[in-house]
Amino acid sequence: MLRFLTAGESHGKGLVTIIDNFPSGVKIDSSFINEKLRARQSGYGRGARQKIESDQVEFLSGVRGGYTTGSPISIFIKNRDFENWKERMDAFKPLSEDAKIHIPRPGHADFAGSLKYGQDDIRNILERSSARETASRVAAGALFQLLLKNFGIEFSSAVLSIGGIGDEKIPELDLFDGKILKNISRSELRMPFPEAENEIKKNIDRIKKAGDTAGGIFIVQAKKVPPGLGSFTQWDEKLDGHIAMSLMSIQAIKSVEIGMGVKSASMKGSEFQDSIYSCGNKGFCRKSDNAGGIEGGVSNGENIIVKCAMKPIPTLMKPYLDTVDLKTGKPEKAFLERSDVCAVPAASVVGEAALAFSICLFFLKKFGGDSLKEISRNFEGYIKQLPGGK
Ligand code: EPS
Image (spheres, rainbow, N blue to C red):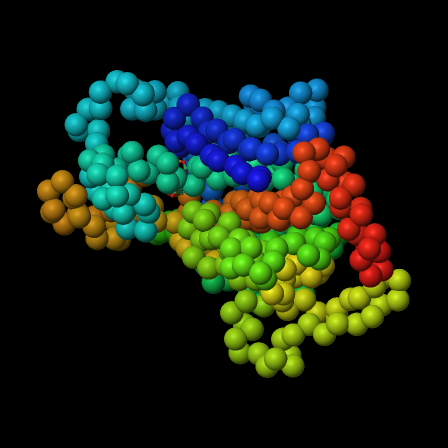
């Protein structure tokens, strides 16, 4: 079964991604992967770290002559900032007592992580819990997208609102529309429509000046996903359940909605359900996609639509938040560490990668094979027998 693992700390030597059971014969376009990494580093409101890094993938295994071999793929992304952290992040040099951090930031993994791992230096928690890890996930997601592209399946993402400004209710937004794709690529906020950009940027500037942070809402879509991925037969085989896990596991994500999501709760059945029509040689089709492409835990051939809310980043530049010194128990103010004011545009790129993993995993569960050729045979055989033959 397709699996991927990530490893590495934010200020260590670098980040590692290992992808296991990825089929052979898939053409690897490093520029596609590096473009996704660049998009993750971008965004109005990103922190100073993004000026230090210029994330690029280095393949350590599993790819030869530009194609995957079927062996485990391992990828390395260098942390340029390691040069400034060599002493403090050395694997063996003893840690100096006064460099240890005992004051947890509310909202990060600092407090819960220190208790869980019995660490007396919160740096041993925050180095791994940092959103820096998402660079590894974007690299993996780009490979899954390269595989699925061979079957016409593509992904797109956009930011709908930041700090409560924007249009979270954009109905029937088609993220594959040429004009919308152009708007997103030109937007420092990765938004589908430019109208709210200036107001949002001004708000981010105000929040930055106040030493505070902002969250927001982003949307991810996948198109041409064939019907039949996932199953209703077992709770852990449902495609929407896995997608929810994939996206919820991204740092700072506090909600994942499929299709109309929360709004569906206030709709009538006759308004929400997507009626089915016979469309001649196209087989069957729908005039709406409120279900977000999944019914009964199974893809139904419509676009997969996922919407996520990202909480404001926990690292504040001003001492707003009360906390405690875990060593002394004394009341303290949350300590300052370099961070972003807003990373919602970055999170939307990570969301694309997370959705790509879920779709790729269930795609290979259904059309499994060890090589692209074998998977293609299985896929074509299935598609041919569908109503409308596609
Ligand atoms: C980030 C890297 C981090 C943070 C930020 C995002 O780098 P550094 O800790 O060296 O500044 O800037 O991480 C967080 C905001 C967080 O809370 O984890 C990245 O590469 O995305």
